[in-house]
Image (cartoon, rainbow, N blue to C red; front, side, top):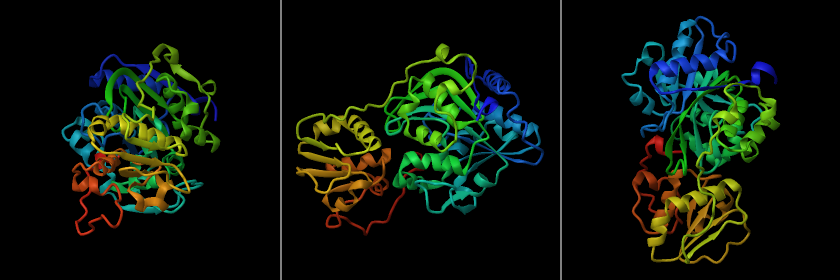
Length: 405
């Protein structure tokens, strides 16, 4: 890939008014030439934001979506803004974006059973909403964020939200890193416009906080976008396993030197994003962690979970043993027991079991349950207890989809 196909434009935006964002999007697109030139009259255009959480600031700017929808509609396209939950309908309920696009939830769309070409993790056919594979032009509109398991999330990971409802769990069961790349092979993005005006940093998705950065970026290549924005945020592309995998599969460049950055220079807008904690140190004696054989994603998840639950772990009066990673024999188990990750499936009867590689943020409820805390019926669906202790008579009650990250 060369030239316009891997160019990334960077544009500073002074404020987030509709006019300022519209001007910023226009400038970012102009720096790429005419990235919407392939949209024709009657084409179906899907814009995929990151908009499944109600918390203010934790979502793609509606004004950025308005700017994109307006430009695609002007070319005669039928435009959809789509995300995997109903939350975007709430956020955009009275927004002027409805003049230019239909706001839909993937959960409401008919499903198509598809085989991901060249998949490494999602190797079985999966169900995706019809407009994901049938649209003529696909635009990703992610929000730049840190992530407690995969370090950094932007253009490529935004596609996990293509899966409807609760089926995002499949990605964690199959393995997040390769699944991210599989989904990008299934649905390549013709254009990515990144919202880095407000970014999310810290221990996200377990916690996290907003930070004003004031940037809009655009590219025709999702890998080039993520490599560039990682550099802007002080994250090395070599730290991101899914970017390395994507580059190996030929989806884009892994080296910033192979990307033409247009507009402002990376060094002129660079900042150091506050990352999720990675130190896997128990907060006190009596909390025993055995994770030497765990993969990096599960180790990072554990570090983030202990940070999130620090006060509860300190207050817990008993012993707790947390185990993660493949092992033929379990270590000595003291007190309450939690098993983390797919590699421990064969030992699942030994304690509270959190499947996934890595688990999701909501599955920290399993650690709380092991310590004797009450959890909601919704949270109870997110971990497995030994059969001798389980109560399978209770009906399942699914969590709010925005919690499933």
